[in-house]
Image (cartoon, rainbow, N blue to C red; front, top):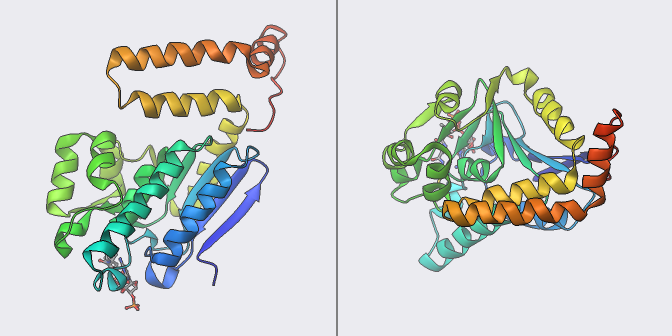
Length: 258
Ligand code: COA
């Protein structure tokens, strides 16, 4: 069975975590497939946007595979965590936005892969949490860091310390997801957003993603300087000339591939 399905429509690639009988739990095979797939897509300039979702009606991913983890040594756990972090880094450093379409449980490593997405839409059946403390461990794929950056330190602490699972409406309220829709509408809604992004300047989107990510780790002065440099550099791109010429000529811009 292919654990990570890939479907392409123009610039939009949809990846589907595909172990539905195990609620798409992230075993070594699925983790490896995510890593190699994001590595390949990041090297392909024709990829404009990636949508990441889960197979079946119950789960995006119910976490790292607990049966595999239960036997791990310290060294194996360290390697697994490093691999999870490498995937998050690949997703964040890619030139394309990754939109998470969270169709069900996003727990533990599933929540952490969701947090490495640029932003999330959820079905009203989605549930989120970092329940690792219930297993005697902590998040290992970036949850202790990215959750706080997404929803604030207080809420992230409560979720990581308690292992509480929250529903989609709560996730919306705390800013973990951008929108909640009916399960049957989720992929269509996310595709609509992806298509809108596909019409704008691809280099501008990639630059925006990079500046917003890198700027978050800088103080405001350095982050604003990074913005200025990147803004200015775009003025020697064909994309800038086309975007502004099209506006002035009152016609749609024709950008290249994302
Ligand atoms: N690792 C390994 N297998 C998992 C899994 C995980 N993280 N999450 C679910 N599964 C498996 C179950 O063992 C079960 O397999 P089986 O049918 O061979 O017994 C199958 O997926 C279906 O899960 P089940 O627990 O029967 O579904 P449910 O609807 O009763 O409960 C959850 C759903 C998500 C509440 C429950 O599966 C759960 O708590 N999973 C673990 C969540 C977690 O702690 N994740 C963090 C890991 S660090």
